[in-house]
Amino acid sequence: MAVLAMTSALKTIIGWTKRFRVAQGGASAGKTVAILLYLIAYAQNNNDKLISVVSRTYPHLRTGAMRDFKNILHSQGLEPYFEASLTTSTWTYLPTGSQIEFFGADDAAKVRGPRRDVLFVNEANNLPWETFDQLATRTREFIIIDYNPTARFWAHDELLRKFSDSTDFAIFTYKDNEALSDSEKFAIESHDHNSNWWRVYGEGQIGELENNIYKGWQAVDELPDGAQLARYGVDFGSVHRTAIVAAYELPDGALFVDEKYYAPIPEISGYVPALAASVDDKTIPIVCDTARLEIIREFSANGYRAVDANKNAGSVLRGISQINGKKIFYRGKNIEREYLSYAWREKSDGTKIEEPVKLNDDAMDAIRYAVDDIVAADSRAQAIAHQWGEDNKDDIEDKHNWNGLEY
Image (cartoon, rainbow, N blue to C red):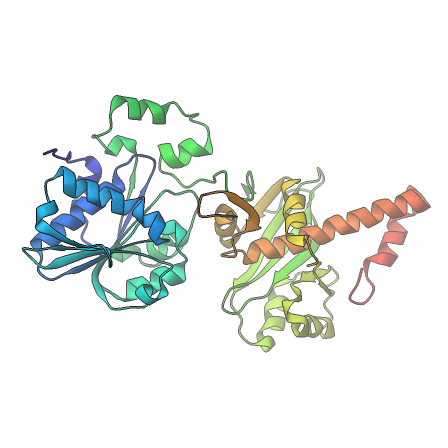
């Protein structure tokens, strides 16, 4: 019978005592195996407990954490002591009656089902906050999550910020897994140490990876020199967030996007005051999500230059392409959070689909509306210059820049 090593990762996890326990880590850090070992020991030492192990889907769980769990039982000679129910994916430790169940977060009946004692969410960055919250509120004792930090997500903004006093946290790397062979260590260390891969999987730090839609944006604290305010962008939301951004053109052709407002506003009457506090210049066009035409009319009635965003067929990919064609500077924690997690959808086999994941994208949509309109205006100006001459471009563009609800 093989004996699994007492790794540094496992020692840390054993010492955790708080309700929320967050394991952030890179490749081969041993965090998932260490957590499963800890949960098996918990089942062995506590009577009649229910432990739920959850990931985004059951197939994802079956080839990941559940496979690790079975390997642990086999390697430790524990299989005779656990009674398995394959129909419910539940293993009962016979001496104590404690159970370890596995299910996917896409099973709504399970997510909103009976309470449990302990919850482990594997690769938690693949779950929306709302799903995690449903699971957490039905958990009596403590909750463990693990993830590779491919982007900032709710663990950083909710657990580590709002519930920091109730949260244990550690960053694990392959160096915390003493069970790794030399060849496995070499495979990790052979990666480019300046790459995003190394930052995420080598160092366990938040990064941006290949599936992210945007890359290379730079955070700044001040308005860049020479910035000229060109557009505001608005994406409406109630359950989701309403995002208002300001887009500035820079002398070298780059753009600066500034977070002006980011919060839910359920009543129409709340939008105009929010806009009044967010828009510094009423002469600048405000490019609005067309989902709420009555609010656009309200803006216009109050003297704002509110116009419809172009949401025709292909507008999403066109806007993304336009943004990716420019150097982007940004300011705002919600812009940063969305930028780092804005990703392409994937099929179950991991194949990328050219369609953004519709989650945490309110600021991204607001930026896209603004940038798309800036590019369209630049194209009109170039066409006018070509037809009427460069000297008349500015005067003619001013005439075409504002015409009711159209440019």
